[in-house]
Length: 165
Figure (cartoon, rainbow, N blue to C red):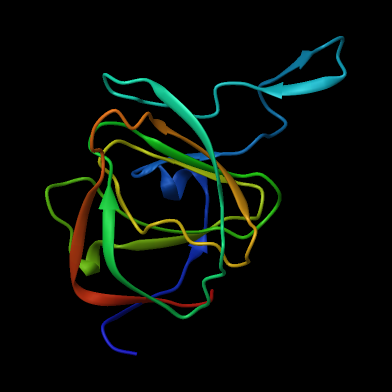
């Protein structure tokens, strides 16, 4: 392996705060609904479609990504936030860097979900494109409707290798 090696740390709200929000239900802030047959967890993230509209989609992985995984580029969405929520429990690896006009490989940070967490990238946050560690993993995607281009791609100054935690 050459270049920088990244080992994911556990994903927490505090660690991820500079890049966006962790989406997960918890014992706090629940509301009963439908004659108290359900607990509802409201307002888990701030979806920001900019001046566009919100789109809700589902993405299903066709193939698994294995580790170690070499990251050569990152992307950002300058016009709106982007959220990914697993539709069934699964490990999710997230690599991010702060918003800005450019990003260097040394700016990247990696996180691993607990299997029940999703994430919402803030507008402009650099991130690795979505990967799945098993085929067939499904994610709810919440982002800006594709009314105009909203994805900048940046090739890193050196490769970054994502390894097992």
